[in-house]
Each structure stands twice: as C-alpha cells, then as structure tokens.
Length: 178
Image 1: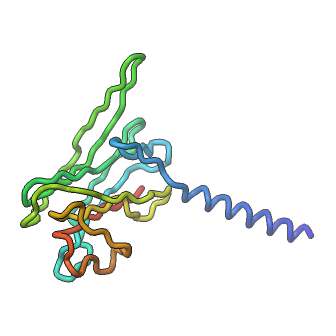
Image 2 (image 1 turned 45 degrees about the vertical axis):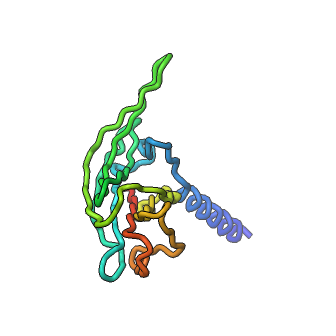
Image 3 (image 1 turned 180 degrees about the vertical axis):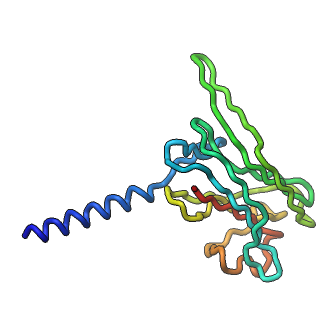
C-alpha cells in the first residue's frame, strides 16, 4: 500500500511540475515580454521568410535581447514600397505619481526587399508563447498587396509553406528563451 501511495504522489508531482513549466507567458501590448523573473538570461527572436524556390522557411536574421528587470523585448515590422524593416526593441515603462511614460530603444534592424510590395502590412497572427526553452512561433505576417493576405493552418518550420504563392512572401518570427 505504501508503494502505491508513493507512486501516486510521484505521478502527481511530475504532472504538477510539467504543468507549471509550460505555462503561457504574458505579452504586454506594444511592449513585449518581461522575462526578468523567469530565470532566462536572454531572448532570441529568429526571423524567417517563405518565398524561396522550395517554399520552406529560410532564416533571415536572429535578434538577441536581454531580460533586464522591468524591460520588455519585442520585434516590430514596418513596411515600405518593395521593402520591410524588422526591428528588435527594448521597451520600458516609467511610472510616477501622475504620469506613465513609455520608452522604446531600437536594438537591431534588418531590411528585406520584397519586389512588388506596396508597403502596407495589413494583418498578423500572434501565437501563445510558453515558459520553455524550445523554439516557438511568436508572430506570422502574410506579406501581400491584398487586404491582410492569406493565413494557412499548417505551419511547420521544416515543411513548405504557401506553395501556391498566394502572398508575395510570409514573415515568421519565432522566439527562444535561453
């Protein structure tokens, strides 16, 4: 009987620990992720695009961000004619008795040419990020001159995407906590 109780308690502990380690992290709108209390030293954002000859995801740029206390890491995309600019940000908030001030410091920038692009980014899809050190989807942008572009349900980093070229390109940003 003692063996059965010990096994059950061990299983409960394993399930509880696994459940806690993969909890969703909080994204703060227009700020990013504050991971200063999560035990990670850095955040790595990987930026991929899909419009290659075989339509698989191709790495364009890796951004590394620190997890300094009360600082938020994020990546933003801005469009211009025939080009997108991808920028990693270090955001912070300062509060006083009567004011709240927001500050953004651009850490690193990457420009990517997309021939025929009008420059308007109409939509994106966010993904839930969990408290794990595995590479996870963060945000997907269909780059298109149509209203928002086309999103596809099956996204895998090692398989073709948008083989029919419904969008001019697709930008996928992943996150890895280290």
